[in-house]
Amino acid sequence: MSRGFLQAVFLVGAVCLLCGCSGFQKSLFDCAMSMEHRLSKLKEKSVQAGGLTFSYLERSGPGETVVLLHGFGADKDNWVRFVRHLPKEYQVIVMDLPGHGSTTRDEQATYTIDYLTQGFADAVQALNLDRFHLAGNSMGGFVSMLYSSGNPDRVMSLCLIDPAGATSPQPSDLQLAIERGENPLVPKSRKDFDTLMEYGFHDRPFIPWPITRVLADRYIERSAFNEKMWEDIHRHWKDVDPYLGELTMPVFLIWGDKDRILHVSSVSVYRQHIPQVKTLVLEDCGHVPMLELPKITAGHYTEFLKGSSQGANQDHDP
Image (cartoon, rainbow, N blue to C red; front, side):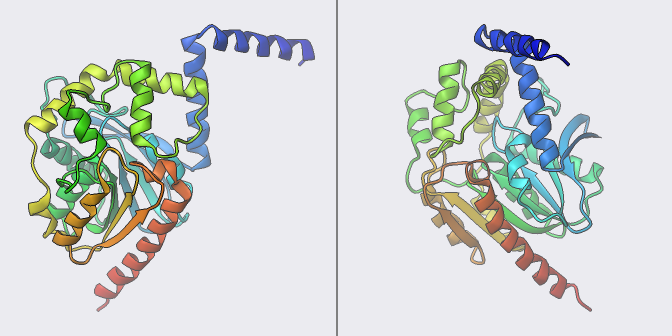
């Protein structure tokens, strides 16, 4: 291949970027995510369950299974770099919850927390998951708690990363914004998307410009549906407190001390209702530690997993 040809290709690519060619930017995004998946040994798959098509990422492994759930408006790719730092012996499944990512969007469904939890339960059944470790961030943490409270024999351990569901003693920046009639979690413009990033991260990780633009456009395209989901969830809101006492498995609570979406004072609520909970507050970290500090967060989680597995094995010894 000639040097002149390579220079021409580079020039065309540069012009596409500078001119805002959305197709070229999307291709770059898809290539980048495909590479991220490969680096984490994750393969994209799907399964039919409860009338929905669930999209998920899977990493094979000879040992126990770890299932990961994302937050509101997010998707399975939030966990890709986190997975890279989990020991290779674990099988890992990263799910797109109903209405999120590439899983079915149903305009006629009412997206309550119970609906999302039942959808996840249907997917678990379809995947024939018997016993597994479960971790969830934000809304995914809420779903994880509800599922675990009703299925304690399936969930070997539960990790909650800045989970939704409890009323914090101190209001978060998000709560104050919502009281003003604003909702940073449903961006409708690229400026709104930048605001969402400011709320989600304390130390925003570097994301190349073309990737950021594609992500922003995806959020904008989904804004009407995300707003519907948000309204459904909050119209049928339920507090998680009554379910916390039913969590009999080992529980690990991780929270970023600079979380602007769910205030870190919520930790006291979980400590009150789950006496055996192990707690970690990460300094200088926002709402999504598995994205902002993937290696550190995965390291702490791995220590918890190993302790939980040893305890579970002792409990099942004859």
